[in-house]
Amino acid sequence: MTESRDPPTGCAMFGIYSGMFRRSRRSASMTSLHRVNGGGAASPASDSDAQEASPAHRERKGRQDRRKGVGGGATRTTATAAEPASEYTGMAAELDKMILDHQRVKGTTQLVRATSGNMMLHRNLGNLNAGGGGSSARNSVERAAKQANERKASPLTNGYAFSGMGNIVKESAKPSGGGDLCRALSHRTDPEKLKEMGNEEYRQGHYAEAVALYDQAIMMDARRPAYWSNKAAALAALGRLIEAVGDCKEAVRIDPSFDRAHHRLGGLYLRLGEPDKAIYHLKQSSKESTGADVSRAQSVKSRIAKSNDARRLKNWITVLQEAQAAVSDGADCAPQVMALQAEALLRLQRHDEADALFTGAAALRFGVDESTKFFGTFGHAYVLIVRAQVDMAAGRFEDAVATAQTAFQLDPSNREVTNVQRRAKAAAAARLRGNDLFKAAKFAEACAAYGEGLEREPGNAVLLCNRAACHAKLGRHEKAVEDCSGALVVRPSYSKARLRRADCNVKLERWEASMRDYQVLIQELPENEDVKKALSEVQAKLNSQRNGGAPARSQH
Image (tube, rainbow, N blue to C red):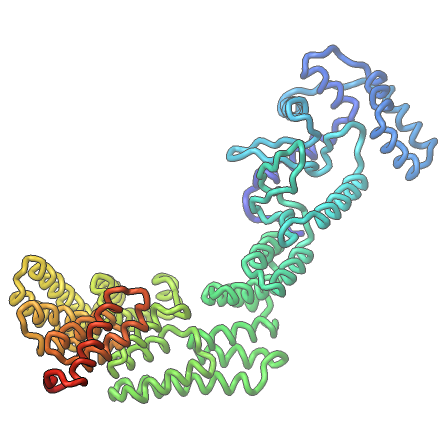
């Protein structure tokens, strides 16, 4: 195991001390313990007699005899008993007293370790034992193996609670422990064992646990490229693709011929919409990659290029088709490809679909800093201005202003970014002014304010619906229906606009048109009693008209 480059932790310092402590003979240790706790100076012989009387000591002595022979063990015991006890003070004596005090109060043989930040309990730490009698390295290994088997058999979730991950874990209930939480101390575990445990967690779909285990293995030996590559796979499964790329890059830096890491890195770059880098790494992994992998990356490259060309020509149908094809070919987590789709959907008056790309369950969520670092300033600024426009279309004007401002800070010289920022500010200000005027019952002025916002953001469903409310208050139901219809063209699921149009059609006695809207609303709002009541009344009016009532007005 390589020497750690980091300063020693609390566990490391304790390990250093334990090495110093083991230099003193056990007889001296027991004598000092007795002195620290106020007793007289016990002789080595009396100490040995006390140990001989305990079953635990007899069992340990038997094991030593079997290893060395009865005569050898007896000779060693006699020599120890004959040696004078050497007294020691300072940190060693303080630790002895702390151990003994804890044993006396808690009635346990566990060691207690005080640190600057917490208190942790552990049954064995290094070769220090809570029981009496001398201890050899072989005994420590045997005890560690026995404890490992006991932990493996315990019903702890996922079976990794004692792997030294630093997680807060809870042991199985014991009468003396009371189910207290403790922080698991780091074990001197083989990093290969940690990797195997991580692989098992990964196979079971426990990706966060796998990441933690791979991290622990990396802390113990950061020169193994497989640890970095496996961690990248678990991060990718958690959707943390940019982090996964960083770990894969570290793996290929350590071993430039590591085919699996190159293959994994190529796949990550493909998903993130970086086909040139994907092609390079896929070609570096000849044992892992196939010709089909490279062809797919080349197809993504071609699709993105065609989509960008069509955008310059404002051919939004082609933009959408090529961007969707790029996603199908593998660029399913590429923010710029997603932005191309969203912008095309906005221009094609399909605002709900554009909004779903940014707010749906499968939406991409990358931080501004990591995206800027990974995709570059210009690339991320484009994603942000598209998002700002989607926010405006959905009525999230404050979010749109904030997002556009961030894009402007990234790329202030970009004319397109500047234009979107100005539009967002103007539309947000117009909507806010219109809302204030509407609350003050100044409906004509509010109508004009919303109209100013529509000049900046034509076809905005929220501004159209708000202006329709002003028209309805002024008795201009025909104009209100027109604005609501315009809002529903771009956002068919906009329930407020549909409800307002249904109400205005009732005022115009357009029963069939009103009933169609209420029937859609009852599907979207099945528990809404007002909608149920309104639908029932409209159906009664329509039945009355069909049964010889007054002729209906012309339908809109």
